[in-house]
Length: 252
Image (cartoon, rainbow, N blue to C red; front, top):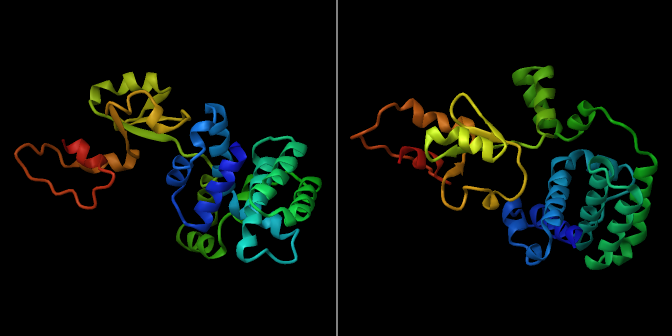
């Protein structure tokens, strides 16, 4: 079940261009999964997306040409399989066998032999690629070259490697003097600007304090503009393009 959910979500994100959170949280079978299965399913999708360029490079090396039309979703089955082989420490036999089980679910059973051949070849020829090579293959040439021109080769590579890392969760407490309290509850640290940064996993809406508005998600950098305004008592502030409204909450 978690792999089926991951497959459906990946098809929605890549095929229908739906946002990941929207596609994942609205899946009709999500609530049937245990917390552990939900976490695995989401990690599988995010890993497949985060490493898509590198994963597609491995898959393309095994194909004469990519499946097209309705059959293109067979690539998503392969992507999930490769993500498990390379980035999720799933035993090869499990990664391949579970990928094959997705073929009939996706009405792509006629591609079962192709899926099997591609994944087994990738596993057989698996090697330890350095992070720099994985990162470089993950970024389109035109984008990477623009970074090199703007920042130099070393910084461009650092940016590419940074894109492979799971982003931390930054939150702004409703009351600034409660930052230390929420840092302890959410296993995070308080940054110099008062933002609480945590690596805690799970669905944000299920974290302690979210439901009663004790804090909201806001990138540390996004919290600076309001603080730079200084004392705004008695003044009118227009917050343009306010979505999801973190700065507006700060102003309140």
